[in-house]
Image 1 (cartoon, rainbow, N blue to C red):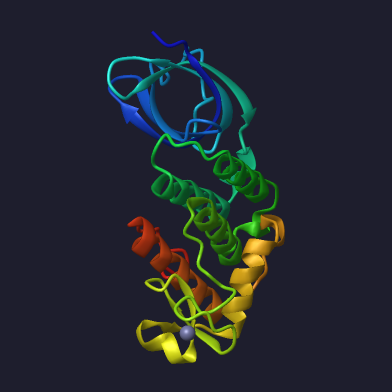
Image 2: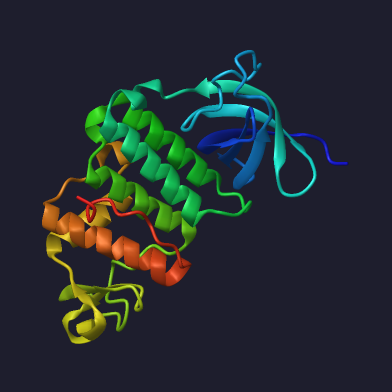
Length: 241
Ligand SMILES: [Zn+2]
């Protein structure tokens, strides 16, 4: 019988279950995404109280039970990111960030860098509501693609290696493409190209801004990479607007 698993975790989703329980999807520092049941957590006198809400960053103790579901036996709060709940925009941005992590990193394969990236993003959105903008959300997703090993090639044409006249994007080719290779590509403006480069190069808090046209192209490039290379459909950021 393996011992309990003690880990830092971020609550991605919390689903009501039965009379008083919750099923949690958490993203952990060293164990990827896990599902766990928190028994009795919805009772007024639960010792976990309200410590297992979405976006909470906790130190959790999890026990293996039957099947895939772990049981939560201990929780310490590291950060609640309470201010996220003050604005619809930050709440929505945080939910989309958690959803993107959940979809791109759905196994127990460890990605500590993804955990830290999500923790940073939630802290950033919580401390500065102005960060709840599409450019930040797209920069976050670019960094997730990098961690997933499917970041688009930006330095040269992904089809032929040409480094000039990069004017299109093709997920099938794996990144930006030049004018002679853009048959199956969609047009990508220089502004979008600069945005994608800047999103990778800069910390999240300094994600570059760009026009809506460029951001829409960036979103399309990111969405097509996730779909083509990871078979993951990300929730729209801008397309929904
Ligand atoms: Zn080319």
